[in-house]
Image (cartoon, rainbow, N blue to C red):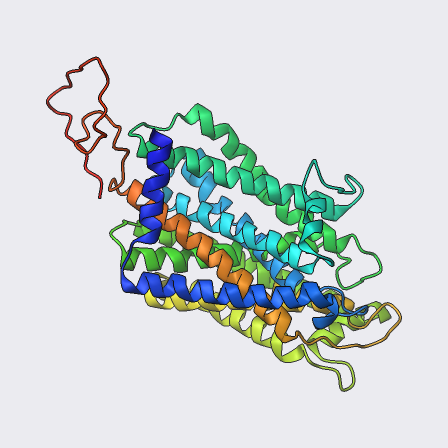
Length: 430
């Protein structure tokens, strides 16, 4: 009974709202439909309709995948303090962070599927247990398993907590805290495994670096919290859900430290690539300086570095970091800057030039752009639904009608009558 009421309440929360909400969801749906059309063209004609080729076999899809794995992993920055260390400032923000992780993981898996050749009927091959994963030899198999496992953890834990609150019960820590510890380790692991997926390719010297794993983590703990600050700030301004200012301040501090570490690692990488240049560093020269007349990515990477640098310097100035308006601008700059640096600036240069020295530049086609936009719209749609369901429950506005004393409970009554204390107040649902 409670579960059915939970589903009906969630459906009401998702389908009801003001005009702006319906315009937002309608716009996301339209973008998803356009992306679905682009994907149907890709399925019909193969990956040849994208900008990818035999020379550049990973493009916009895997660039977004590499970036979003970090956004998903960064949820641990709120999960560990809230659940393990019992930091009350993060108590009301942690469920939002887990929603961000779920939506990011959905997009990650969608981008992997979009980059896979063939028809959607072959997707089952990437499914753990029933699929044809070359495990444990394949790093991609490890990555798929880690992503699916982390997705399950970030669905089960919040669902148990929300369902307990919906039914008027306090969640039992012994039932979910052990999984929290697992998810903390798992969050770091999914990003390290993704870094190893790139670094383990010796024929691609641009990725073949021991520093790639730590750089992945530093950028993840920059972009992920930056997006969460933007989301929490929006929720705080548009709803009655109280997000503590201390929570946002702590997140801003963590973002600042991670951004500083990310820049230090970038400087270290640049020193290694350019102080004693070799033939193996031509990919880095193509990315940062261009090679002959080939310099398509140069404006992109320097734009990303400029955004990261300006935002990091601004966040290091305490009065600016404490200014909510500037904080939002800086977080948006960091999010876009890391997307450029870790997405376009990491994946594509690994293929240009090729191991044979051929320079074939890459430009995404309309198919890739529409499919990418559709997947991002899918992720934002999922995130909006999750937030829309969670907020009324956490605010106490949505409770099961089967809780003792509820006035709007069903007409069917139990045979035995019960008396309740006077201090038990009936709970109404919208």
